[in-house]
Length: 218
Image 1: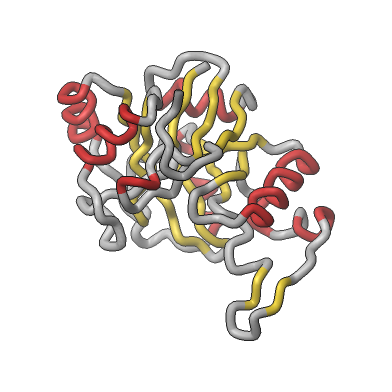
Image 2: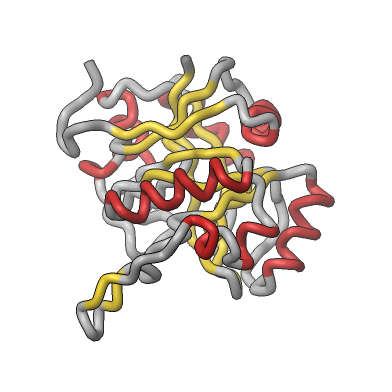
């Protein structure tokens, strides 16, 4: 069992985040994770920078990006060119395929199940939810995230199963106490970006979350 938090932001690359890479990695170790992915908004870290953090902390640190698209936010791994001007999901899919990468629908039902303006909950069937365009383009679905509701997570899990897409989890952390609240369990040990991508594509992983938001793993 190998546990990686696939979705994290730092103040080095995301203006909305409140922790440094050092703080992210230290917290991940405290939470007894085996690795973390840094997925800044619409930008990628260089492999040289990631390797610096890996060597400094003797810990698995992989890079990706959370890309804003016309179908919502999508986590990408394996892509090593700028995504700043990429907005159409079809274009992103083409770039990721060329790079041999993987795409994950991030928090796919955020702002979908609750109308914040009118304070109304929407009931959406699994069949209806599965028709959202984003699911035509991704390899997996982020089921759990520390900023997603239980209802959102349950529906994402059902859609993942209904469409036979992989299920992952990531804390979507922007601050220290969020790190490791949700993570992906891999059947095999992950030591590189290529291995991460291969395991997600083959579905050899599952989503997990902690019972308490502030309790380290036992």
